[in-house]
Length: 489
Ligand SMILES: *Cc1c(COP(=O)(O)O)cnc(C)c1O
Image (tube, rainbow, N blue to C red; front, side, top):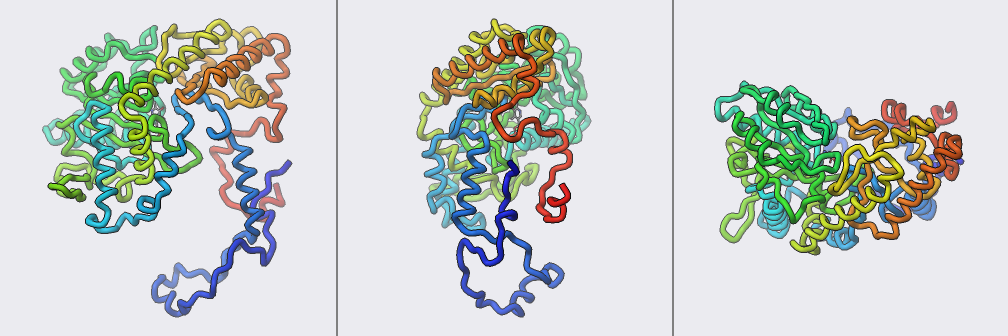
């Protein structure tokens, strides 16, 4: 079945809603809009009725995997169910209809919310100051590396040019390093998957600007030598960055600031239950220790007496990293999340996330390979290397077969250091029944790999689109609808 688009359903004269005639004369418009930006012809927009459009979007939502519909154990991504109270709060007109240019005396509530959220995040991370501006985790990394650079420059140590990144790191880490004009030194992990202290010592030097570390790592392992690592980095004059994307493993139990990290980012869309994926807005607030606070992006939200205001007077700031002050309505959701859970609730999030991951790891450790023995933190990494060798079935086949069981696949082929990697993050929002159902499916699929490998090679069998050309879809995405082009395809 070909998926229908609004354009396919379009017919002249169909309408969702009626607008009255514009009372702004066209001559007036051409005064307001530069003539070269005025179009000669009306755009060819689809013309459809409201029931058609409502049903199309409902159908597309059902066709897509989504967290209101089911489990999505994508490791490292933290795809958890988002409580509806956050949507309710963010939809309140007092927040939702604010214009970012409104004078600060009229938006005291919004400023206070941002200020308090910054305080809370700093507290939860063991840091001294925060900024909500970066719109994603990767952007938080970039922001903090620029802060590192500004810090070193301010001390006359602008010659520091290298950032050390473990080979298990998320791809955004080396990318952020490069974007900041630094060179990445990639460090191979020790046999137990953790940072190799000897190798770290060897890689440090006068030209080191900093080290980026994910704790717990993308292997779901806690860096137990973190205090020694922090000492080593600091005595070489470097700064230590925490990729906080996996913060839901330790939130309420341990704080990067206490481990010796100088800066970190949070993924509100992972840890704090704000929407994740679908191309919508995210947020990657950063938090830093006091010595880095002067370099944070402007404007800062400042408490002045009993009022809040924008503070632009930060001469050492790296400047702006996003329009206005980041994705405000995402901050509203995270604020509601923290407020509704409270300190004990945030601890429970981590406890349950770690418990769930260990439960799944334990149950599947005899079915798949377990490259790094547990206990794990919030996610576990298995491997299908033995199954692949014995049956020719690869992880992608297992992932596709899971669709027939009505389940979204875990992350596959990441981290890059593990062959046939299957990275499972159940998250704290899933019940034991859901986890058991997933374990059962993964176990049956492992059996099928031995008894009927072709069934897996040709999976999925239950949906109308099966093996898509994902590489081409990413490299040559078709982002516009043209009738002639559709007819040709
Ligand atoms: C998701 C993730 C990131 C990047 O976060 P985005 O919000 O997707 O930019 C960085 N590091 C780790 C470990 C992650 O899991």
